[in-house]
Image (cartoon, rainbow, N blue to C red; front, side, top):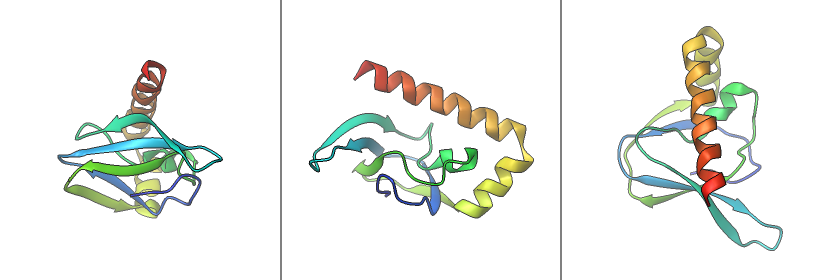
Length: 101
């Protein structure tokens, strides 16, 4: 879905299935750090001025996703405090998952 440190082109909202987020180490090995399901999004931090993916996103259980381009998502975020708040809460939830792994 996305590669670590590459520009985010789309934000994906899984409607089912499961996506793992992983950190790729210098030697190429990957460690899973968090999971995203229907209550989350992949690439949403692009809306908070983070243009590159922080992790690799890999589909673990096939998922249908709603998809929005990075530019349209940024425009929506710039117009909506509510969307910005949801991104911050999502970031906090992902950080909680990382602390548990």
